Length: 571
Image 1 (cartoon, helix red, strand yellow):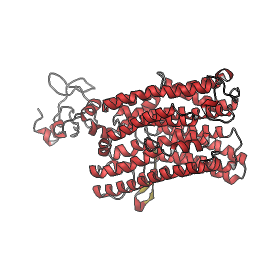
Image 2 (image 1 turned 90 degrees about the vertical axis):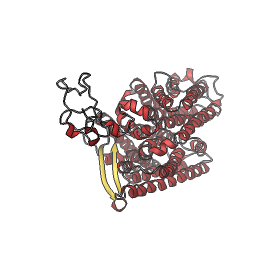
Image 3 (image 1 turned 30 degrees about the horizontal axis):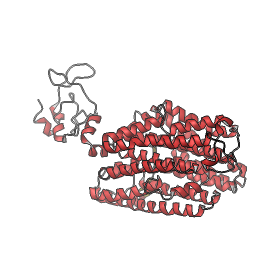
Image 4 (image 1 turned 90 degrees about the horizontal axis):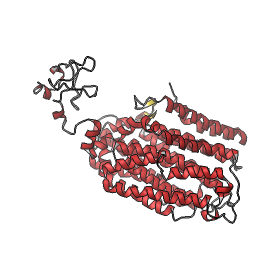
């Protein structure tokens, strides 16, 4: 099937622009919904049609954009971004539907900014050119700046937005420097033309010292956007200032783009630096888990409980990325999807609870809704249990993969990270109990969820349950590409484990070339000593010759097809 990614990418923004030009709030609202539905349809089609056996980039769009700078308009889908794109489409549609519950001032402008925001996120996830990624990564901030400053009811929104812009702008400037640096230095090292295409940058390995400073620039940008401790200074004020539907997609999607950037850009292009700073990044992830969990079960503001719990969950994701092995990387992507599916309905449920507490988002003013609104209580319980990664949930599978990966890389850090699972149960259950049980708040109303609200929340909760029953869908579709993203760093960080898991050898290539493994007329790959196809073969124990899988008989090795080093010693 042919999917035109440009249509997928620009559809939400186009719907927002047409809505603005229509001069009709009702038409703009309808166009926003249609644009989000169209994106969701594209995303579902891509997931169903994606060939996981082939792997690699599919549905590629590649056009030269700025030839003098080697910048391409290159888009593609693979196992690394496939489910993050689906998550983006789901959560933006949910945010649009949730926003329609109440009247909105300057409604056409609101839908425009949400549409541009979705296009920016999709662009950052689909971009296969570093300059294009940087452009979309920076564009993501602009619509959320206007959505916060224009539609927030918080008194401190100006200071919150200013802090958000300063933090992210500094990180973005550092990333721009790193992007230019890696492109120019790759040109000098390879002797080729200047290019920002990620596949071209990955093909050339820069010197270790050069990789180090480029890595630190990228890391600063991504850690601020996630956010991770101690780069989270903008988060408390920013989370309190954003409208809840906006905050749901910001926390559920935008923070994952930063984690994705480590796997898409940093690990493949800067593998030596990733290994060099592995321990530092693991410590930052560990501190994020401990600090975020500790603050989440001490604060009383429901938004900040979810905000600091997100900080802790992103710490787990960071651990998975910098375990630098396939288990950790797969867990990081799965947990990114899991967290987005959990935190968005959690914010919507907080909005419902606050409405029943006369607008207060303090959990001390809530309580007693379990008997008055049992459907809300059931939905909240499912979300809370998923957030604490109870066995049987997809979050449990994601955290299991992450902790397994970290255990294989750094046992001490894994042992401490296990405490994060226990801490998650504290803040998740505390939030649920204080909102749904305990005594009824003095100003609390007992109203059940409406059908309109249920149409938004119930599908999200069903998605959580579906992924809990079948997390293999995300794991299998992404396995090849996620493993490939960390393969070079994995080999450099742990050669022996890499050899065990890939069936290769940690020995030098010259020694591998003498390994029997090719049939008559077949070329042996000098890098692996295996047939050119790279597949393992069975050896006849009596003759030491490889067995033809079609006939079951030993086959003779053609010496002319062997490397010169192996021809001298081949029997």
